[in-house]
Image (cartoon, rainbow, N blue to C red; front, side):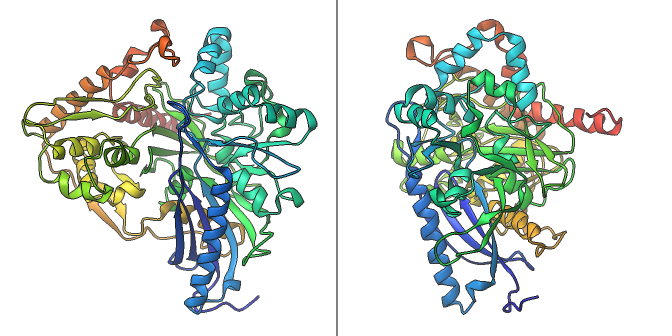
Length: 540
C-alpha cells in the first residue's frame, strides 16, 4: 500500500450547480475540506420561459477549477498524487445533446427550470390516455411536467435539425450534465465513457425505478431512441479515468445528482431521515430505504443512491420548489431593490412578520412544482399597503422558501447561510432546523461515494458540528402565517392560459385537495403513511 502525506488519501469532488462550479479536495479520513476553487456559470433566456446554459462553458469551468485547486494543493505543500479519486455531483434534469464524433454540443444545455415544453405536455395530456399517463408516473415516479429531461429531449429531437441529422448518422449522444462531463473528462471523442448514475437517470423520466434501466414503455411514450442514451451505473464505482490535465489517470469513482449528494453529505442514510437544500431551488428529500413509495399528494419518487453495482438501490420521496435562491437574485438583478444577496439577512431583521406592512410573496416565476404541479401559476405579492417597505418585500421573499418534514430538518445549500432564513424556517415549521457548520454537503456527498468505491472512506462518519435553530413563535402565530400563505398561493394560480402559449390544466384534472394545503402538510401525511406501512411490512 502506498504512503500518503499527513492528510492521508484525498478525494476530489466536482460540484456542478446551476449557478456555479466548484472543485474541492477532501481528506478521506476526516471529511475536512483542504482547498477548493469556484467559478460562476451564466444562464441566458432567448425567449420568455426558456433557460439555457453553454455546455462548453460548463466543461471549461470544471477543467479550470480542477487545475487551480491542484495548484492550491501544491502551494499548501500537499502532493496532488495523494488525490486518488474524484466524485461528481451536478444539477439534475438539465439536458445536453452532442456529436459523438466531434464532441461539439448540438444545442445549448436546456436547464431544468426551462418551460418551453409546456405545449408538449399539453399534447401528451390530450393525446395519451389516462392509463398511459398514470403508467409513466408509476414506472418513473414522476408526473408529466416541463421539469424533467424526457420532454426536453423530445423537444430537441423535434426542433433541432443538427440533432435529427446526428441521430440519423449514428453520431448523437444525449444525457444530463454528469454524462456530458464524464464523457469529456474520460477522453471525449477519443474513447470517452458515456454513462450516468441511477440518481441522475431517475430524473430523466425514462428509467424504471424497479429495473434501474431505460424502460421501453417510457421510451416509446416520449419517442426517445435508446441508442443515444448513456449506460446506467451505480452511484459508487469506477466509471473511467481522467484523460487530461494535472489529475491525468485519476479514476472518476462516484456520481450523484446534487440533491441526492446533499442527502448523503448530510448523513441521511437511514429510513426516515430528511434533508432540505436551499439553493437555486428548494429540495426536500426523505429517505424511504429500499422501498419504492408512491405519493398520492404530489411528491416525487426518486432514487436516493446505490452504493455499488451489487448494492441495493435506496429510494426517497422528494418535494421540489423551483425558485428559492433565484428569488433573491431577482430582487437584486430583476427589480434592483438590493445591492447584494448577502444584504438580505440584515434588511429582513429590521421588520417583523406581524407588522401591519407584512407582505406575502409566492415566487412562482415559471409555475409551481410539488405538490401542485401547476404550470399556469405565476409569481404574486399580497398584502402591500402604503406602509410597505423594501424590508417587508425582502422578508416575504425569504419566507416564501418553505417546506416541512417531521421532527427536525437538516438544512444545507447557499441560502442556508442566511441565519434569519433558518430561524424563519424553524418558526414556520414548528421544528428544530439543523445547519451544519461545514456547508459543502453536496460536494461532500460526491466525495463520500467516490471514497467508498475506492475503499478509503470510513463506512460510518459522525454527524458534523452544526447550529440548531429552535422555533420561537406560538402555534397561533404559526397558524396565522400558514393561512396567509395559503391565501396567496391560491391567488397565484391560473394566471397563464393557452393564449399565452403555456396552457392550463383541464379543470377536471386539478386535485383541489392538493391546491388547498401547503407542501408541508402533504409531506407530513405521506411520511406518516410510509412509517405505518413500514411497521406493518406493507411496503413493496
